[in-house]
Image (cartoon, rainbow, N blue to C red; front, side):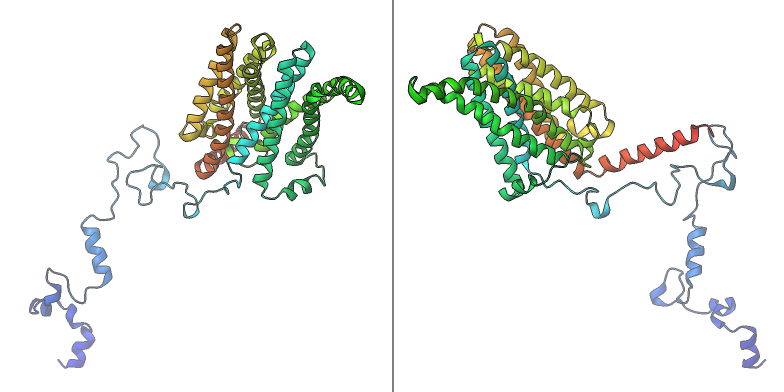
Length: 398
């Protein structure tokens, strides 16, 4: 037989088993693997060795006795699955939402604004009762606090001109715009009430005496006007927070105004208990109990009633702040009841209320930042809402 006829019968001589028996293995391919081993041959050996096989159940039906899915498709969570169950993750580990640009100056702004509002309301009560020392000290406290609040707001804005530019428009649907006008209306009235308190230093005769006489009713009118703005000043920041996309601020939009209102009232009561004699601190003690109860109940709902987005209020820095605030606020309320005759106990209870109010604002601020930095607080609630809508649509009558 000629070479041409042999080539026609076997175009690949190396594949002839009779010839391969007489060939020596290549030194670089010892161990049974041929130099000309195709990729398909390697895959066949892997399959023969059992690699890539799925374990099939010995019974034609699942362990629970239910019918087997057609086509032999695996159930979710199968340990033999080639592709594992998908887990959500953010793009390159980045947060889903952009972190708020607000700094801790906003937390200080929240506390000082609430203190100004609470002190103004209690100053009106002291004025109605004729408690001169309590009224004067609370009005001065309110003026100092609102000044600090405006300072922290301007610092966070970066430029004072931005605050002036916000006064060029009045947009009812914007919490920031409404809050700017609330602060603008509260500040001058609060300042006038505090300045008129200094009229007692004027002479009693002549023109100065006339100004001294007119200052007393003018201070009462200005103080009453500031007290009307005070509840709005204490709660508009809660609406501002809830109007954002931050999960732990947006979800408790019903409770946050009550948390801030109770915190503001408790802080104003704390200032009154620290700065006023025991006999003139009766309204402050009552406000302390009311504000502390409102803050504690609302904060508890924020901490536990909103599923996963409530978790940041219980962990890390926000959790520590909120637990400390809860303990101090409760201690302040108890001290307000027990310190009716002790100036030291009353002042200590007031200090606890002030510190607790500050820590509450810090906890709310930190919890919002935490909920933005972890993608699960954004993704999981969205999936739960989507599943709930799908379930409701499936069960709805046609």
